[in-house]
Length: 462
Ligand SMILES: *Cc1c(COP(=O)(O)O)cnc(C)c1O
Image (cartoon, rainbow, N blue to C red; front, top):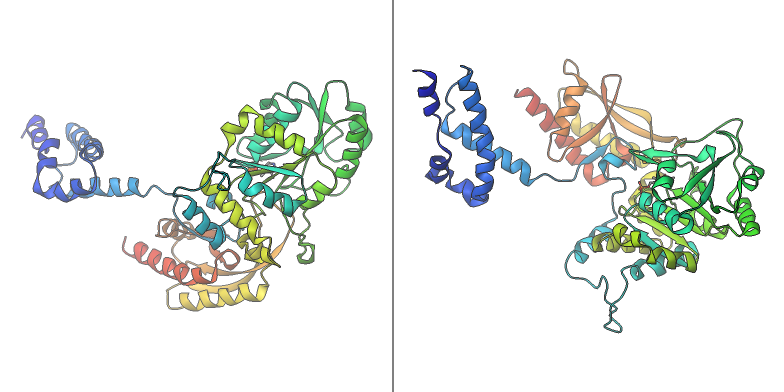
């Protein structure tokens, strides 16, 4: 048979789609999509045949490939994963896991909801109103507003307060948060000229004072949330910056980053609270909703009535606004903080303060469940990084289940675990796999053990 004869044996798209065998797939996916998934598969066979390689695929091979492709597409996610990394605020795993109350609120608000309807008057309301009072009560600020994320909040705050002018900031605070978020770049985008003062390790109030000109519109402080300068260092405290600002008629913008609402110093967590920034007199305080606050992705700004009103009027406010499910989840998360010790129901803070005994208990349960598998298992002491650009120096004692995969490579097992349903994301250390029990909930211990068992099965089957 010559090449053209072989090629002509390749099934035709139309024939396949009209065949009885393909009917069930066409009941699940539209004809256009089945065709779009099939054509590249057929092209691949055609190219191989033209190159004199391969043969004609069995009819069901085509069907299964197309079906698998469409099923993958239909489950593109993001979908739940088991976090055994120990990194509490893991940006790649969606940062803060929401409290059950916040998940329920988001789901309920996904239907019609009173997003911008004032139920009392029947008139148009404001989407900001749902969380503004809560934020004011919790932080002590007179006004508040929420946007899509904290990068957006900083952009909006700078643009509102200082556009066209200069903002003074310490060289020790020109932070990169990750990705393309660098404070100097955000300032440039907001139309504000950056005036850097001091040095990387030391900045004094005199440095700020000397930098103030007629063009100065704001003093900016950025909390070094994801790093610390230790040793020979000095930064100006917020209160002193506010005092200088008052004297010169300039507002102080405070980017707190992580935005914690409770004082957890009793747990060794040394992080400035939002309330402290408000009390110190910052004009606007910006922070993330999904770091130490433990809510959905959003950026929160609290501050003076005048400045928050200006934020709301800014054209960027519309571009940065967040949706109803976010606002509902945030509102339900904030409501937890109204209760006595309510922060304990916020998963991020619960994990951060969970006694080691409870983590160890889970490690023991997991080790027991893994015992029958052909793996060397040990429970070990380790340290969980908090992650998410928060508390970089905090050493959180934890217990991990160490898996020595023997002749299998740890990386191979880690990859098989990532391909599971749900995926289990582990930590790698010295070609061993560590499962950190600080970030696995009680009810996730069994699914985690099942995930390891099925990963081994898949690997054994290959
Ligand atoms: C994380 C962080 C940001 C950015 O917040 P997102 O919510 O990720 O947009 C900005 N500033 C500081 C200091 C941060 O830590």
